[in-house]
Image (cartoon, rainbow, N blue to C red; front, side, top):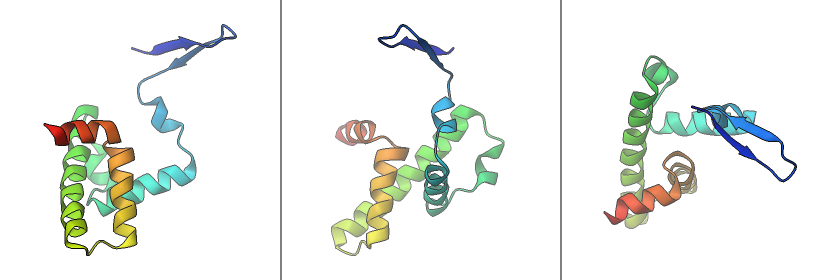
Length: 105
């Protein structure tokens, strides 16, 4: 079901599920693709999955990658690229607030 919201000029904006991903810039798409590849995911891995299964597979790969990078960070052997990957995955893939809430449980 589509969400609609109105702004102060009484114009209705409708955002369908998944639309936020279609609004990515080419640079954001490139960054997301690179992050998925660094997590070991390819387009082929995700192509034929249902949206829920795709989301679960991405989350599983992201959680595994975050755990590995956090270990490297604790050991003091995290590179700048790995730190950037860790930040991107936490903030963009997992969602920073959701990741912190899950870690607290």
